Length: 169
Image 1 (tube, rainbow, N blue to C red):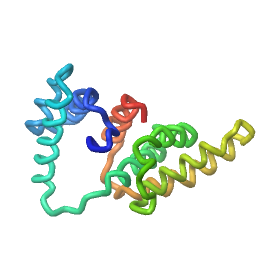
Image 2: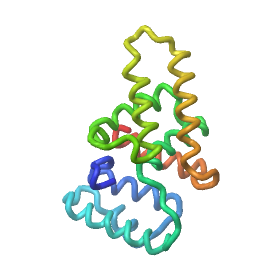
Image 3: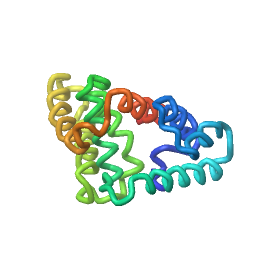
């Protein structure tokens, strides 16, 4: 996600604090949480170190495509009542600058995000909120299926949504 500028450097210390609040205490996360105001390069280096630590922990376990994870968090947050369908679709639309050059067929998550942007772009003010909510509900149900059922509990989903909101997503 660093390479895609989805979460800019200055937000990672606050994200690390959210992770620590959940009892996840990887050494790089502890250090990252203390890096408020540090140079972007130093923060990015610490995020890369945290990624390596997590990679060692996960070993050969399967990984989600990053865009499946992004779309899936919107779906899971919707299912948990943390975001309404219209807000989720509008927030997906804000990802345009990060995914505009990507092939939507590369992942289900990218396809869902593009579909969400299309729903938003169709709204010229004449569409009913019920239509937008119905389309959003269908889209978010698909997105929720991208993440395994027990992979994100409510507290973790709340933390992820808080971090995404801090970044405008």
